[in-house]
Structures are given as structure tokens and as C-alpha cells.
Image 1: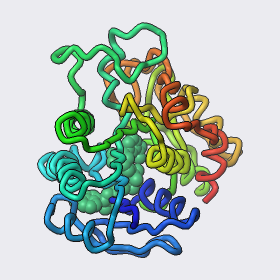
Image 2: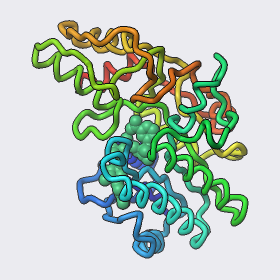
Image 3: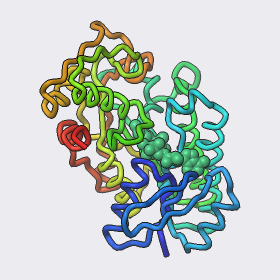
Length: 315
Ligand SMILES: NC(=O)c1ccc[n+]([C@@H]2O[C@H](COP(=O)([O-])OP(=O)(O)OC[C@H]3O[C@@H](n4cnc5c(N)ncnc54)[C@H](O)[C@@H]3O)[C@@H](O)[C@H]2O)c1
């Protein structure tokens, strides 16, 4: 039996590596060809092609899936239909294949962005996974977040209607490998590190890379650990979990963390920022509540923002 990791990007590759390191048979599949980590078999598979996905599962006697394949927020903004096809229909295909092949568990990659519109009316208390959902006033503020929320709902429904054991993990803003950057937080770190290495001052003025108040970040290595914990969890009753460390940081904190590694970095940005992270309308009122991930997945982050920037900002 093997575990199939869908999406050979930042988090999928680290997850496959973590599973292989503990001796499991792992298949890492992506729409693009490429090398896999050591002891990980690579395959090419488009998650929008359900019959190809089903054959892959059969061929490798897959018993569980970690589904990270997606278009991220910048890519989906540029090509919404492709993003909807991959992020919604791709996830539906994964769940349908889990039903067809009676898989033991499916872990779906979601995002804390699904909660961001609630920030306008939320009090300054930890953001619960089950925050009040006012369907119109607090609808998702991006197509990306709408797709992620749909994935969570489909996961719940496949569980309720067909007994598919699906668990969604809402990662905070993920920091990781700076080689091929697809995410907003990755782009911010890359912008600062490149400026420091080139020895030139940088003025941050892209609204996506700025935020007022504070925001939470997570190391991609912790996301991979969380995926493994979610595969192992004995009784994941809530089925949706925040993957974050309960800390939140200003843009100044973030720049200071990069300056610890690259002391010559000079960065400026507009003062009195009103918007939240990645151009979302509201500033975060509190960090995410992470207690359920600790209780039900036995998962807690081990890398702080400083550890994370020290590791990835120096690669
Ligand atoms: N990076 C972040 O800040 C962040 C935050 C929260 C949630 N997430 C979610 O975590 C997951 C993994 O993110 P990541 O940072 O590793 O992204 P990534 O861009 O590094 O990896 C995504 C991978 O999916 C693949 N893919 C795209 N379309 C596909 C298709 N049709 N079939 C198969 N593969 C396809 C891409 O080729 C890519 O390798 C995604 O679902 C993402 O939405 C990421």
C-alpha cells in the first residue's frame, strides 16, 4: 500500500519527503514532470482528469492521499477558470476517487484565507475554525478562498454522505523554498532576500506584499509535518484545522527577522496601512485558534518565524 501526494510543489514535496523518511511507499504526482525527493516515486497526473487519477490509485495500491495540487492566489487571479477547474473540480475528483477506492483518509490543503472576510466583525479573540459564516457579508474575498472553502464543504459532505474520511488543513501564510515561488508570502521573502543580496534598498509598494496590523506565518516544513499528523490522527472529529503557531507579526517584525540574517537589508514601506494581508480588506483581529490541531491531530508547529526565515531566507 502507498500514500499518494498530489502536487509536487513546495508543501507536497516536503510531505512526500517526510513520509519516505519514515519508510513509507510514496507516490508524488504533479501535472508537470520533474525530479522527486530521494526514495519518492514521481508520476505525472492532472487532478482534473479523474480517470487518470483513478488509474494511478489502482496502479500503486494507494490507501491515502495528501492533496496539495492547486493554483495559488496570484495564478488563479490571472486564469480564474483554470483555477476553479483545478481547485474545485480537482478536489471533487480526489474525493470521488477516495469514495470509489475506499481510501482510508484524504488530507486536503486549505488556507486561513477562508476566514479573512470575517475579520471585519470579529472580536479580538482567537479565530475559531467554526467562525460565524454570514453567507453574504462574509463571503470569501477571493476566488482562491472561495475554492478552498468549497473544498472544505465538499470534504464534509463526502464524509457525511459517503463516509469518506476527509480532513482539511488551513495553513497560515506559508514560507518556504525560494526557487520557484508561487505564493504571496514566498514572494515577499524573496523580494527582501534578493534586495539584501544585491545590496540595494527596497521600497515595498505592491499592496499584496503589505499588511497593516499583524499576520501569521507557517514554515512549509511544519505544513508537511501537519499533513503527516493528519494522516495518522486517530479521531479527527472537527475535520478542519488551523495550521499555525498562534503567533502574529507586523510587517516591521517580518523585515527585522530578515535583517537578522541579512543585516545590510534596507527596506521601507508606506506607513498607516489600512488593509490586511495580501490586499484583503480587513486587518487580522487575532491569531488563529490552534487548540483543535493540538488535541485531535497531536500537531503543533516547531518552527518560529525567526527559525523559518533563518532557514529559507538563507538558502
Ligand atoms: N503557499 C501558501 O502560502 C499556502 C497557504 C495556504 C494554503 N496553501 C495551499 O497549500 C497547497 C500547496 O501549496 P504550495 O505552496 O506547495 O504550492 P505550489 O505552487 O508550490 O504547489 C502546487 C503544485 O500543484 C501543481 N498543480 C497545479 N495544477 C495541477 C493539476 N491540474 N494537477 C496536478 N498538479 C497540479 C503545480 O504544478 C504545483 O507543483 C495548495 O493547495 C495551496 O493552495 C498554500
